[in-house]
Length: 170
Image: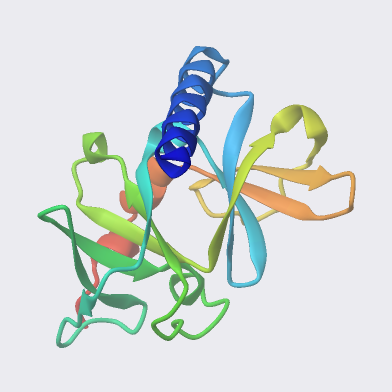
């Protein structure tokens, strides 16, 4: 009986946190994640969900960074290994990775495979850095944390609109 009460309390606390996050300034915190051994940030309103990688169906004649198609709650998503797409690493083997499901309002059923999600990062805890030359058009800003870790904020909308991202066939 106590397990049911604990679950109920957990669900209530989670609902309260979600309500609080919806009323907070959306630009004040970002989802942090790791891909290719680097730290990345994305606005919460640009992703639909973070899920454990389900079984992927490989696509023949696809570029190495396009790792397959996943079915998540009945919807099919084309899955791109972000680190491989950026040339930072070889595609990850199946395992404990996660998928960031791109928000459906961008008009593509795309998912980005990442190493792990790190949770919310408050921009107030980060210091802005100047944008390096030759940054990708989907890189919005660069940040440094107090522990000297570098972070790159990306625009999922601009990333999934890139012609090279959309051209997954060889």
